[in-house]
Length: 250
Image 1 (spheres, rainbow, N blue to C red):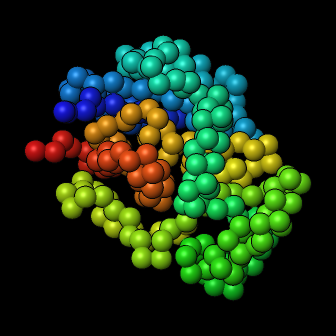
Image 2: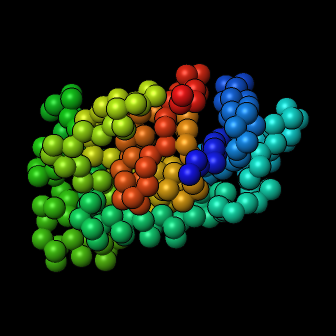
Image 3: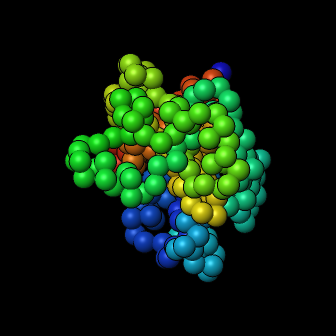
């Protein structure tokens, strides 16, 4: 069964919509129309420190003025809402808890200063299968100490536990992404207000919003996390390619 094409534009409401964003919208919109699919607008409003209240409406007004209205959005609704990331925190916690329970992720309590010190010692430092045993996380701490840290609201991130021999990449017929041997992806919550961060909403969105079969790929490290979350959900990852390189599979 061929999946319906669903493509997404996910701007951050921190200011106006620039020309590069309009270009990305145009590619997504035309691709969706060519293949009888849907174009979705989802607002990435997790960065509350830079949030501009009027920006979301400005973005939607710009899309309407350009004649590129989304099929699903905070304004238009749809079957896979909410379409603001700030309204999906319960969903992200559910997925994060599942990752922890299955032993596929862990809590990392390292302070920013401690991480900076590691980077100063080694310019190529990565938080991965080789270094995590030297860091302050739930893999190296006792169960009681981890519980105490969580109970006292100690800041943490949740990191995907990459196997030592893991190479993430799609099928042999990748469009753009081949193979990466990534650091362990931090998925949140890195902020004191327990927002889910910038990465995890994107990754879970791939699983819950049913984006398929082709997705734009703008940032390779984020894609690694998306593939891992999709794998946990036992769904095949969508084909990924940069917007300017996107094509359909023959």
